[in-house]
Image (cartoon, rainbow, N blue to C red):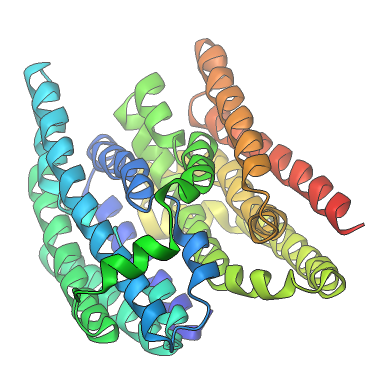
Amino acid sequence: MTVLNVLGKIIGMLGSIWLARCLGPADLGVISFVMVLQSPLQRIISLGLDPILVRVTRDMSDPHAQGIFRHFTVLRMRLALWSLVLWVVVFVVVWFAGRTELASVAWILGPLLLAGAINWISMGQRFGRLREASLVDFVSLSIVAGGLLWLLVPGASLVTAAWIYCGCNLVGFANSARWGRDVLGGFRQAKDAASFQASVKIRDGTWPLLIMLASFGYTTLELPLVSFLYGFEQAGFYRVGGTLATGILTLVGTFGTVMYPRYVEWSKTPELLALRLRQLGIASAAIALGGIAFLYFSGHYLLETIFGAQYVQSFPILIVLGAAKLTILWVNIWSIPLLALRQEKFVARVAITVSLLCILSNLLVSSLNYGGVAVASLSLVSECIVGIVCYWKVRKLLS
């Protein structure tokens, strides 16, 4: 992870902070609800093939490997377009069900399915151009944050904010896509499809895709659950309480993207993999504990200073959700190596079981009216369970 990666995520958080300051909790909850609903579609678009491609395209100087990667990029963009069509149709039904404002915001933000279809940092890493990709990502995030700070004013209507948010993100996406086209040497070449079909089977991504979708139940579905169980205003407080935590989660996601190819290489030597896992496990646990302590002692001040006094009541959510997101860093230390060791089925079964239990538990405790704190607490418990089980499995495989 480069310094530009970190700076880019911080700038991206500035845009989210300004969005929260300009909108009330209820309007912020609507936009957050719509954005989170796009996450499972963006995961389906990947077909679960990202870890498979890392294995079959280790030497990206090979034109054959470049062709495989290029064809997959085009395939993802096509699937994103079809997802956009499905998205529009679904929210036509929502419109006729009487939720006109929600449907309007969803239609406006629909094109962001395209913006989230490609991981440019991953592409830069695969082609040995990580620093260049980090710079492009930094510029794109700066465009988004700068556009929001320039165009969005406090008291703006929900629809106006949605248009500005979508427009800024699409400009940033266009900047990244232009760089991606140069890296790939264009988005289409005649032999790419044949190279892809000869090396990659779509069904190979079934288990990794199930892992991603199942983990959605206890990592990302929290905000829709808060919206459904407690209303959009509570979802707005949850979003604010989780903004700092979400920034941490973004950094964690970048860490996982960068580390996976290294795990693949380390897995060739079990002794080296075991050593690296011990080192990373200790480091991640220390970072998580330090981060939780920081949020506990500075949370009130940060919420009031950054978001305003109306959001201070998000403090309990900030602490619990921050702990949950920081725990993901430790969980990834043990779950990602299992993918490198080709234990996708085991990880998928664990994720599906924990996800279902988490959703069921949220429905059961909703009558107690603990709000976002209950949802965040169940997310934290779920992450801990997944991490402990994956730790046990890795230790068993390497012993």
